[in-house]
Every structure is written in structure tokens, then in C-alpha cells.
Length: 163
Image (cartoon, rainbow, N blue to C red; front, top):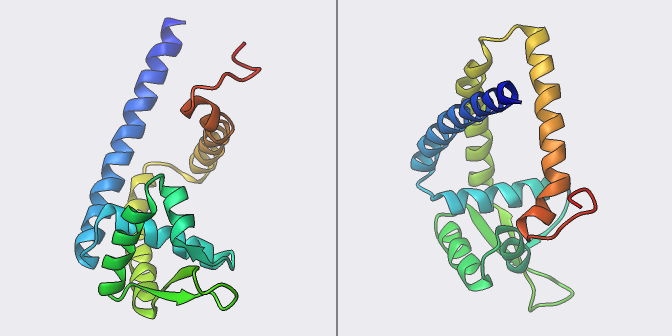
């Protein structure tokens, strides 16, 4: 049991080291685009929804980010002023305002994604193909268990598994 605990501790340390590298890299991109982490998150959510052919409202963003609509509106206002997002009214309900990426932000996000891949992929140079494949399988297994347990754990709800 003690060996398992030590292995988990080492694994967590490794995850934090990888996270630190990714965060440092992302902050360089925030500086290039002159945006904050919250603004980056909004852009990523809108971009992801575009890929799913889903329009994104302020209310949607607030719910995903876990912040108020007022705070979300401030973030969106800043992104609109930087010409990274634009607002569009819903033709069926003029009270509903959707946000979308501008061409400028789409190009910048695509460019940054390419650059970050080059930099961050070097983290995995230590692994050969088979090791990388196994790492991906194991990571997916862990993240799969996170997505199943997260809502219950976040809100303090017990699951049948916990009893």
C-alpha cells in the first residue's frame, strides 16, 4: 500500500510539472493576444461550440464558467472591443444575444494552436511511439473516471459507489 501511495505522489508531481509547462506556454499566448485567462476560456468555449455548430449566449458562457452573467458580459465586452468576438441578435428572440468569433480571433487561435503544439509536443519527446500510445490510453482512463465522478464530488453528493 505504501508503494502505491509513493507512486501516486510521484505521478501527481509529474502531472503538476506538465501543467506548469503548459500554463507557462499559455501565458505567452495570452500576452501575444493581450488577453486574460478568463478571456481565453471564453474564446475556447465559443470556438468549441462553433465546431459543434452551436450558438453561444452570455447565459451559456456564464453557466459553463460558473460566474454571473454580469461578469461574463464584462469579459465579452473586452473581447468585442479587441475585435476578437462579435455579438449577433437571435432573429427569433431579439432579447437573446449570441457571441461569435471574429475572423481575426479565428486566425490567431489557429496560429497559436499550431505554435503551442510544436512547443508542447516536445514534452513527449522522451517517449517512443508505443510508450506514447500507452500514456494516452492511461490518461484517457484517468480522465474518463474524472468526468464520471466530478459532478458528485464537486457538490458533495455521495454516489452509490461511495457507500
